[in-house]
Each structure stands twice: as structure tokens, then as C-alpha cells.
Length: 91
Image 1 (spheres, rainbow, N blue to C red):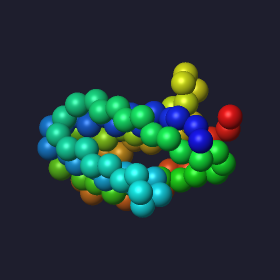
Image 2 (cartoon, helix red, strand yellow):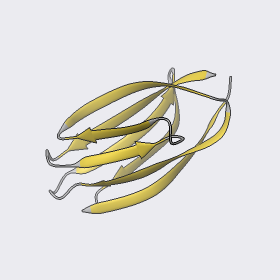
Image 3 (cartoon, rainbow, N blue to C red):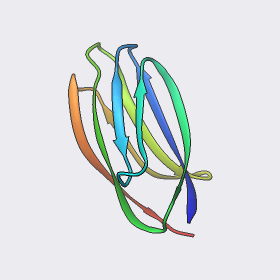
Image 4 (tube, one colour):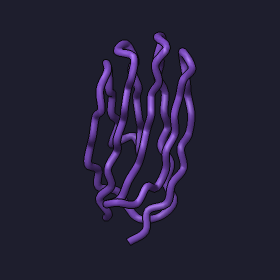
């Protein structure tokens, strides 16, 4: 198992995003701010499912890191969005 960090930035104030790692680690972030969550995950190829909305002129940014290494990043500016963000976790 490896520890990774999920960083979600919501700019705009009214946004909301759900992030699902494996149906056991599902997170919901709401409102303006930067949110950080430590997650323990198995090595290998992984993907998260993202669904959310940002009705204002803001954005939702999602970053997955392992220590100082960025494994994946995505930025959404649509009013309603859905996506899959793949990444690989190595020891």
C-alpha cells in the first residue's frame, strides 16, 4: 500500500465535486477552498471517477501527488463535468 495525497481546489464558491477511487474511498468537497486528503492505495495503474459542477465563473482543479511527485492533474471549468483521471502508483 502506498500513501498518496488528493488535492482539490474549488474557486468560485458554489462548486461541488465527488471523487471516487474504488467505491470504498469516495469523497465529496463543496464550496470555495483548497481541500487535502491523504489516501492509502494499492500500487499499480489506477483511475478516479470525477463528477461535479461549478456554476459560477470559477473552476475545479484536482491533483494527485505522492510526496513531491505529481501523478495526475485535471482542471474543469464547465458548469457540469464528469471524467476519469488515470494515474500510476509505484513504490
